[in-house]
Image 1 (cartoon, rainbow, N blue to C red):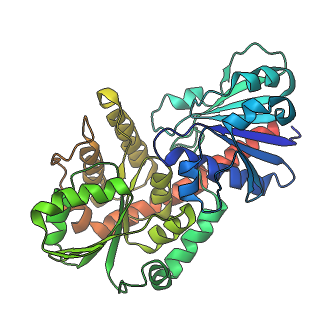
Image 2: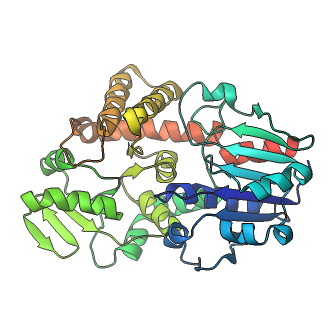
Image 3: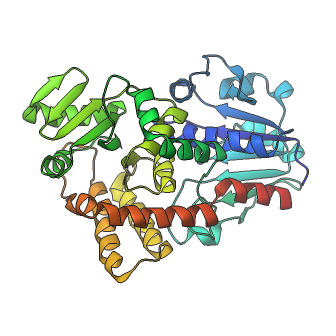
Length: 387
């Protein structure tokens, strides 16, 4: 199908993940569809401004070759704004009625981009049609996932370049972002989470053989550590806290690109949500995933589904089988909660650090599988082209 224009709709609720994913897809599609007009439509701009310093507080602007507008702008200027050949509804955001009405007469393809999931059933729904009242427009489900039969995960070329740079220039990257600290030859982990009690992590690291530096990222992460450190504080130097052999740095908020360089230069990464989590697993380094809390612990079904896909996607030795099983149990324990509280969890991080090198090798294998079989943007481009 010849494509002249693509619109991507995104409704930001209360985190950076939705816009992070949409912005990443938009940039990559722009590289592939070089002469195609691509517009992003957002309900609000605060989170986008936080992850991209180029974004201004205005209803219409151009960023990185993309047109970014607010939903308010679309509704007020629908006649001149018009519709695109292809439009993507990200995460069930509800495209404005005015747009849908016009699209049923003038657009060709409506892609319903769902949330990332490891559940098996999504493979049956991936690329299925959702019936709508239109003779020319078709609505298709696109289901991101961790298997070859799903829509895959977002692996964009910009991230791959930053990943390579961060790994090959570790000291340079860390000095660039943390110039006031000597991080050379340190064992470094990043922590980006929702509300969480990290007492078990600190107790494990306090007795670990290596001196560890934790880079604490995001307000919810930093507040979580502050709550428990009030009880156990040993030395406090402003935005640096030392607790035994652990040094914690309360870092500034970084843009999407800056964050990616930092996690590429670190030894391990605790990630959250969807966007940073996918960066973590594609890196091929030991990771922990803090999944978004859902009612009735529905998030636990998602984390268990991921661990099943993880285990079946990596070829491991007999020795590694027990390690990957324990690692996946830790991922599940880390997320086992029915509310965002600071109550102490049941997770035991001993396996993560005692078998760190083995887990690193397992994660490298998984990264290779994702890179070869699960590139969402390539799958999306192929489908649009062949439609």
